[in-house]
Amino acid sequence: MAETDQLTALRARLTAAGLGGRDLAWLEDRSWSDRNIPAISSATERTEYARREAALNAAIASLSSSERGASIEGKLAAALGARIADFDDRGEEEEER
Image (cartoon, rainbow, N blue to C red; front, side):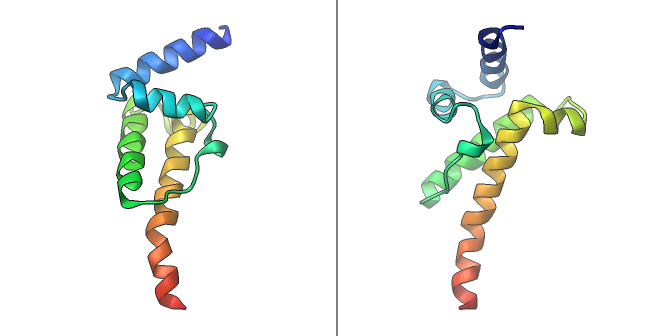
C-alpha cells in the first residue's frame, strides 16, 4: 500500500474514533511520529493530549496488544501517555526537592 493510502486509511480510522481535523493536522505537523510529541506546557494542553490518547486507543481497541504496539496509533498513544505522565509527575519532583 502506498504511503498516501496508509495515511488516508489512518485518517479515516482516527476520524471514526472521534478526532477532528484540528487533531489530525496536529498529528500531521508532528509527521505522525511518536518521537515528535512535545512536552505538555499547561493543564489545558494536558486535557487535549488525554483526549487524543483516548481516541487513538479507541481506534486500535480491536487489535492484539502486539498489533497495537506496532501501529502508528499505538505508538502515538503511548507517546501522548508518556507526556501526560511526565506532566503529572512534574509536581511530585518539585515537592521532593
